[in-house]
Length: 317
Image 1 (tube, helix red, strand yellow):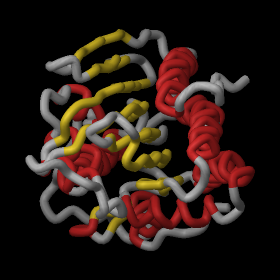
Image 2 (cartoon, one colour):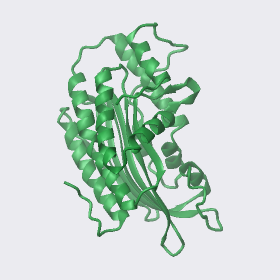
Image 3 (cartoon, one colour):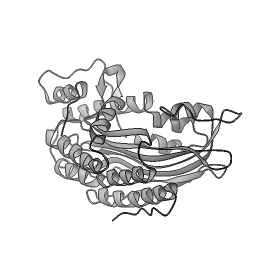
Image 4 (tube, one colour):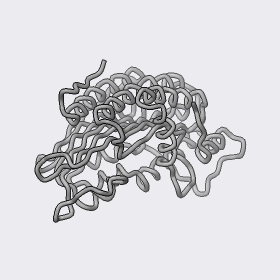
């Protein structure tokens, strides 16, 4: 059942959506663990909004899981504008090189304990840039969801991609192929010539269709989160694993850290935003990770099988 109300402004509908989905997603993930999420509410200075972080750590299934929402607004300095915008080169700044913005979104990263259970990342957000009189200068949506396994299970990748394709198809059959390639290109660790995982969907600076339709598309994709991911965790969380497999998971987590700190626009934007919540921005980091010098898995191994698809992305559906 949709929580959207088209009679309200898009920003209010998006805020209601992310608040509802944070509750729903946390409850869904808790069905596979013995621990519960703990809430951490925060505010920005100068009445700049705030957010709520829901974190589960050291559970039986999830080593670290975070589901965050934020609703923030205020002046944005030039450094943050440069990290935020990509296609929106025409943003009009004031005499101080700043703009007034509104942004809200839901972001989550789930790091399971078992190396056979995949990490998942999700983020859906809405931005407005405002004129001095409070009217909207420009707006856009961004978001996506991607899967990062340490070991390749083809059926898992196909399931994850199919449900996200199904979520997008009602809004245009061209969207999934476009967003799938966008995801492969965006979540790429360029200095290693590897994608972060087996991909999913990703889009940013998106306003090609009506704002209400964009919002409905975001809701449809958010609805795909639990059914696309929970069955994979349920299947993999109790599989036996070796110390070698756990070490490989740690190496892959190191790649996750490299991408987030070196390339991710969202991380850079957050760190450049005044009075931002650093703990929430870096919530995506795994609790543990490893870097081994000059490590390359043995040819023909299951570890090498994963690297093959990260270096040469394939179509899953």
